[in-house]
Image (tube, rainbow, N blue to C red):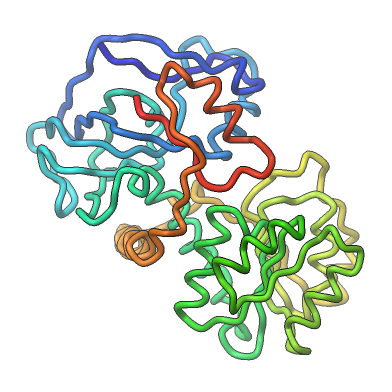
Length: 333
C-alpha cells in the first residue's frame, strides 16, 4: 500500500492534512517510481494548504519536494543523467511529494550526489533553487557586485543562510537582518564576517546604513512582506530593487505610489512557480546543477530541526511553524 498526505479544504494544516492509503502506484511512459526516504515540511507547502479555496471533490496531494530511491523507470522514459534504478534522487516541485511512493514525471527527478545524506537531499532543490533565483534577480541591478550592497531579511532562515553562503563565495557585499539579538548572535557564529542587524532595536535601519559604510543599498530580499516593506524601500538607494519571495506577514503591503516614483524604485515578486513556467530547458538544467553545487558546498547550512514519522504528521506540521525553529522539519514515511 501507499500512504500519502492529502487535504480536501483549506485551513490550519495541522487540522486539515490527513494520511490516506491507496494501492502502490506503477511508473508509465515518462514517469519514474520512487520509494520516498524523507521529505521536508516547507513553510510554503503549509501556506498553500491554508490558502486553498473552497472544498475539493478529490483529495489534493501535499508537498512538492522529497528524496528517495528509484524503484522503476517507465518504458521508453528519458531521464536526467545519473537517474537509474536503485539510485538516490530528489523530486522537486512535484505535487504529491509527501508520500511513501511517488510517481513523478521524469523531468522533475534529479540524481543526488553520493556525498549528500538524506537530511540534505530532502531539501536539496527548493531552497537552493530559491537562492539561485534570488541571486539572478540581484544581478539584474547594475550596481550589484560593484559598489551596491544587498540587504536580506529573515537572514537566519534556511534560504537566508544559503544566500549568505553564496554571497560570501562570490565576494558580494551583504547586510543580514533578523528579528532578535539572539538570532543575530547565532548568525554571527555561522558567518562572522557578515554584518547582522536585529529589527528589535528601533534604530535598526540606521544600523544597516552604517554597516554598509555609506555605500548604496541597491537590492533587498524579503520573504515577510507587511509593514517591513516600507522600511526596506526607505533603505534603498535611488533606482533600488526590492524582491519579495514570501508572504509570512498577515497584514498587506501598504506603499504610497510616491515612494516608488520619486526614487525610481522597483518592487518585484519572485517565486519558483514562475521559474518553472518561464525558465527554458537549458536554464533549468543550469540552475539545478548550481543548486547541487550549493548543497555540496554548504552542507553544514542544511540544518534539521527534527525528524518525524508519517504517523507523527500533525506534530511535524506544528513544529515546522514554531517560532525560533532553526532548520527543516523532516518526515521519514
